[in-house]
Length: 243
Image (cartoon, rainbow, N blue to C red; front, side):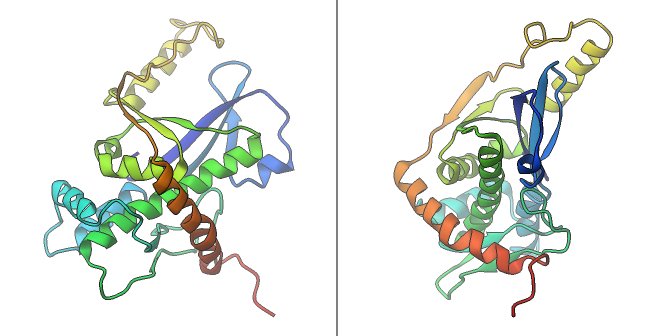
């Protein structure tokens, strides 16, 4: 979770079909022999947060003030739909020309509700990626290990958990990408043997576990299914003309 955000999982080696191709996800060979990976990303995840910080005042709003605003909005869903397409959309609906939107505003909404809506919108988009992986791969990913700067925002992590109905383990590894690159380099140099049993997994070092709320998930799921997905299709530049 950084300026951009990626969700990634792995699969046993299998024949890829039109179902995987049409999922909007990317597939490739995992570094562990006999395994594949799937992934989908959001280019403006933390980028949406940075955009909002820059427009809420003459000076960028601090991260602490952002967190306070989100808490002021309360624990229930805001009902505002934010579509985080500041630089187009990737998986599972690739569309380079689509642009973002805030829908559902009324005069009672203020900075707090808009701040929380931006976090909710990015969570809805990542849920679309998780859902696409579930449908294409026949799996049900319900446990996620999260790394990156965005994991410091506990309000955001709780929203992600509530939207997706997944448990999130926040790793204490502060530079996970660097650790992964070092391990890949070790493999390439022969210090680590290949294969699923000999390649050492990076442990989650779970400092914090975020568990979804059953009540809030039900509310978020209703909004996601009946509002976010249908309205997203209206925004798409790939849709066919009416009539």
